[in-house]
Amino acid sequence: MPANLQIILAQRPTPGPLTPQDFRSQETPIPVPGPGEFRVKVAYVSLDPAMRGWVSDAKSYVPPVPVGDVMRAYAVGIVDASEHVGFKVGDAVQGLFGVQSYAISNGRRVVKVDATAAPLERWVGGLGMPGWTAYFGLLDVGKPKAGETVVVSAASGAVGSVVGQIAKIRGARAVGIAGGPQKCRDLVQLFGFDSAIDYKKAGWVDDLKAACPQGIDVYFENVGGEMLDAVLPLMNIFGRIPVCGLIAGYNAREAMLGPKNFRAILTQRLRVQGLIVFDWNDRIPEASAALGAWHKEGRLKIREDVRTGGLPAFAETLNLLYSGGNNGKLVLKV
Ligand SMILES: NC(=O)c1ccc[n+]([C@@H]2O[C@H](COP(=O)([O-])OP(=O)(O)OC[C@H]3O[C@@H](n4cnc5c(N)ncnc54)[C@H](OP(=O)(O)O)[C@@H]3O)[C@@H](O)[C@H]2O)c1
Image (tube, rainbow, N blue to C red; front, side, top):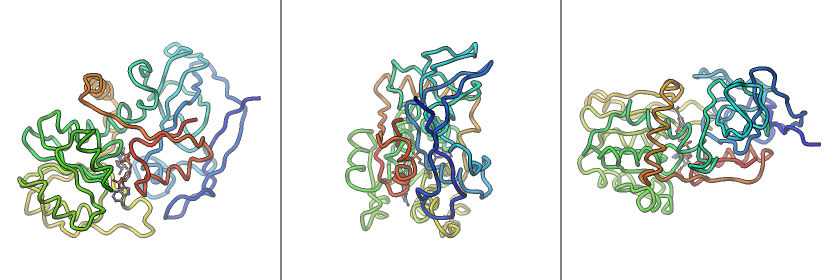
């Protein structure tokens, strides 16, 4: 008999990479929606760097996933039973459905998606939360102007690849920092960046300097640590740094040290602002419309890295993000 396979947080993970022991799987009866609810048959679970923070009890922007609960995750799927007037069987939907094969929802923060306009998995990638993050983080916080230089780290990933392409659409120069020659080639040839810097290569900071002859106006920060140290001295006066992510520190066993070149924030009068995509929840339709239109016009290329190991492979697949083992938006096929 079919069941609902769920990935449960088994213990509070200690600092460092997540281990398979941090999670366990369980099978429960397929849930039945009550009045005002619907059921989603999940097709793809989104694997996001933030998941490392969601299972930690350090102070954050959302409460930690309780031990014993289904692991929190964005996912996309199809409504297969409904007692909700706004959602009918067959609707394709995206939301925080968790790492499980079936989810019950009351529709809160669920977005209907158009499965005919793009493959389902894209709606948890460049057309979903990572795309919204790139859109609001770059345009509302980074505020690039035509002719300015925008640098983004983790540039070939889900958020970074969209950031660079929106920068280009807005008439700025886009320079991406990524790990390895293939990812760097893709940045220029596939995503249309003006330049790509391989931070795993010796002398990459000089390469970055050479790629930004007019300095850097916007640095979209996805990584932190040594990368921020390298970029800060190249920032122009009144530059902006949207701090979107600090992935270099997510698996650190000790607290990350602050930037060595903090002085540049004073001397260059930089604006450094953290951002969490949830803050723009009421403007998701705006981002979705813009990203969808650019994608349709062929101006926004989006790539997913779909893994087929199934839900039990959740922890080991997630860990790929922290070593650069993914190439595009990482999703798990259910
Ligand atoms: N603030 C928000 O609301 C929000 C929302 C979504 C995502 N984010 C953040 O955005 C960033 C990117 O997320 P994503 O979903 O788009 O992931 P992604 O870029 O698709 O995948 C993560 C990439 O980070 C790079 N990376 C990992 N460890 C690194 C290290 N120590 N140094 C340098 N690069 C490293 C790897 O690329 P390389 O092979 O190039 O090293 C890896 O492929 C993350 O920091 C994430 O937390 C924030």
